[in-house]
Amino acid sequence: MSEGINYKIWTVCMIQDGDKVLLLDRQHDNFKGYIPAGGKIDFPESIVEGTIREVWEETGIEVSNLVYKGLYEYVNPIKNDRYMIFNYITKDFKGDLLVSSPEGKPLWVNIKEAYSLPMQQSIRRRFPLFFEEGTFEIQVTWDEENNREGNVKITKT
Image 1: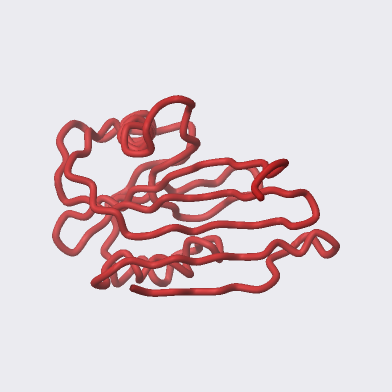
Image 2 (image 1 turned 90 degrees about the vertical axis):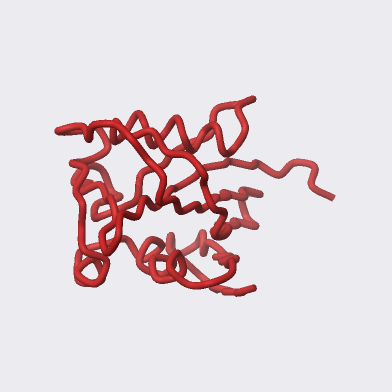
């Protein structure tokens, strides 16, 4: 049933310190805005290992005790693509924050103030879910013809 499907796996990790979170002020390419650290998982590393590596590469911070919060995925039935983004949160970290990063400037931001920052729709949609009990699954069907998001299905557990 899944033959011919192109799977791509990414991850993000929200790092929380009291009433603040660590976000990257990303101002390059077509994915501008404030985002949590994360990125593409390299085969054959595990998703958690990849998350820890990506956070360290982008922020200089070493995270531990990751808590799984949910799955955000894009499906494109025309191209047989399924992009899966695994989402984590942690309050356990150590290290010195990088001054700058190729992915954006790492900044500690007050959680309440973060809601008014520029974010991609996909980040804004799941941002509050990191701080709620339980997990989430968000599936977005990509509208290939119009090159934009189509149907969005959100499930909370």
